Each structure stands twice: as structure tokens, then as C-alpha cells.
Image (cartoon, rainbow, N blue to C red):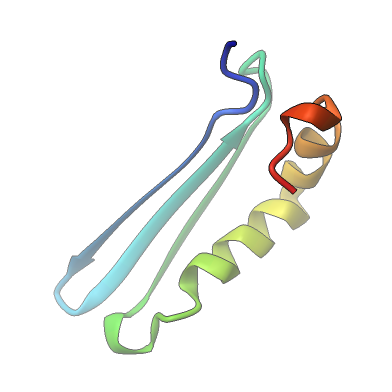
Length: 74
């Protein structure tokens, strides 16, 4: 079993701000969708959802839809 769709996220709090970086790549690493968001850490409870929505709207949905159905999590 190999890597089918590289998906990753990294977050850190810096000076009271939550900084989130998320990435989705196609299996061949030819297409890269990257999202960078930051928000006051006390107000950032939906930041991951916002990042996911931006990634999907920027093309991540197309990458995921091209994966074999048995390899998808949804």
C-alpha cells in the first residue's frame, strides 16, 4: 500500500495568533493546494474547517474525487 494523496497540516500559536498551514497534493505531486490562515487563538475554533473549505474550493475536491473510491475516507 502506498501513499495515495498527501494531505497535511501544521499549526502553531505565535503572539496570541493561531497560524495554520494546510496542504493537499495529487498522488504524482504535480498539483499542490496550499492554504495559510491565521486568527486570534481565542477565536480560532473553526480555523481547521475554514482551511478545509478553502482547500476544497481551490481544487482539493478534484484531487480527492480522482482517487479510487476504496482509498477515500468519506
